[in-house]
Image 1 (tube, rainbow, N blue to C red):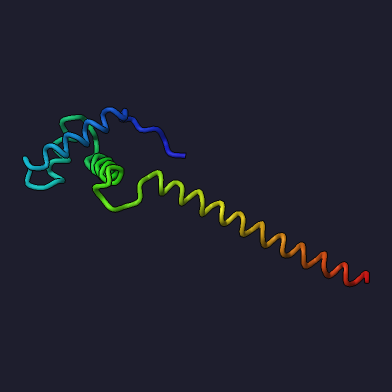
Image 2 (cartoon, rainbow, N blue to C red):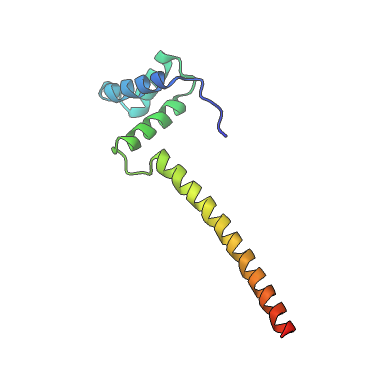
Length: 105
């Protein structure tokens, strides 16, 4: 399980909004990210860049899978693997029982 963030959700939202608003004032997007991170006391500009990308995906501004969709896909893959294992066990058990029934007959 992931550790809790040391930054409250309100700060994250504010930081993302400030970056979106200040993109035009800076030479590059990353320059805007670094500037906002420094002003708000965010220790890593990369952290703010990740928040920005997540917000863009959530708002449909970026064609990627949202974090909710990614979590659902991960859960479904795990469930699928578990069901495949259970199916293999049942096939093996069925073959064993079938062989035992033929031996008795």
